[in-house]
Length: 339
Image 1 (cartoon, helix red, strand yellow):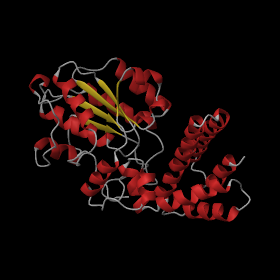
Image 2 (cartoon, helix red, strand yellow):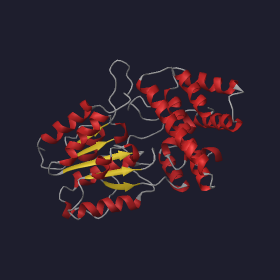
Image 3 (cartoon, one colour):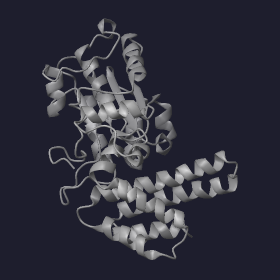
Image 4 (cartoon, helix red, strand yellow):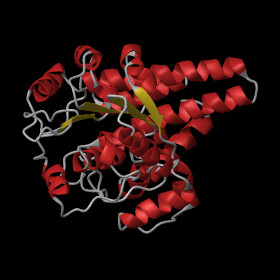
């Protein structure tokens, strides 16, 4: 992780300071056109896989709106932000009085991000919108991601969405919109981002100063996500993925040595991000297997794997909520898989 920005992957650029976005020209054009029409929806649900540029798009659009407060005089495209202009400097420093970024708060005792966005964080949004902008400009809340809202926080956000203040804009980010309250989804205009093409992924990595290309396994496992590519390259993600797939292909718990080795490695104190990668990769891999089974016509296997992916997600979520032992959590995951 980058020590200057909690939660930022090594090699990444914070979304609020990133001056380039790759692969989402149509989404940017849609937002610019909607804003310029003067009839833009007050809440945009920006959805898509993690690490493909949703937060960067949100900050680019926030910069666009704050730089052109009159929609009718706004340009028809979103330009790359000038890092030296006043709006960029305010966004980069977190000093903008017109933008509120809601994400999982840091636990003061552990120094780590909490597992959810709490209702106390959402109350900040209530106070934020209750204040009058000194410039009369837009007030923008970026919820990043809304998937992390706990039940009380989600209900609190819903109340604000139901009666939005004037000149208020919500940019609601979601990796898995199916996990959001249906009532929140219904209050938002959905804008789906697709994973990056191989070419755009290489361009994005080059922008980060990371050599594009790499092994075929990393290119395939990245699945169009810059964040996943960084995890695979910088945090041992490729080795974790290879070990997981190898264990799955063996098809049983008979050979416990590789399972124990993987669990031991992920339980180490300095493997927070690697462990998080494992939990997400395991669920994603089982989901991919379910889709493949469905496409091949094996509906019974597809249903079994879909249920397994949901059980794994719940298993990892419970472990995170109660700070359970990581080694036992990993071992328990394989017990579920091979039950």
